Amino acid sequence: MPALSHQQSIRTVYGKVSLKWKKQGSSITFDIIIPANTQAKLLLPKPSLEGNLIIEESDMIIWKNGQLISLPDGIDSIQEFSDNFEIKVLSGSYIFKLLSE
Image 1 (tube, rainbow, N blue to C red):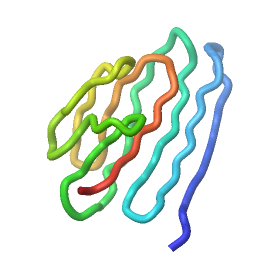
Image 2 (image 1 turned 120 degrees about the vertical axis):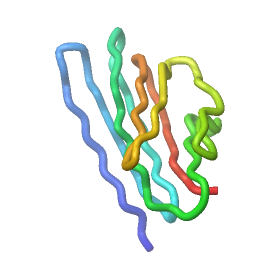
Image 3 (image 1 turned 90 degrees about the vertical axis):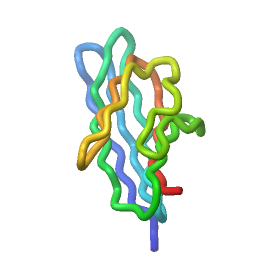
């Protein structure tokens, strides 16, 4: 099955916000840039995957088995809801990957 992907950006008064996502096999990767001196609330969809869901940020596991493992610099919080994850971040560049174990 081929990979599905999309990218989008928007210029704001604070700078450019950009998002690239790619679904390949059983994982989804989100490449996100938030402009300086801002913060964002990201709503990442929960994929329908078999097994335990894992979230990585820049190849470091931050969520596993329904629990927060670590909170890297720039990430304020992660909350799980029935159909998505809400991740609050400060300005910066992030690469989130959702996959199953």
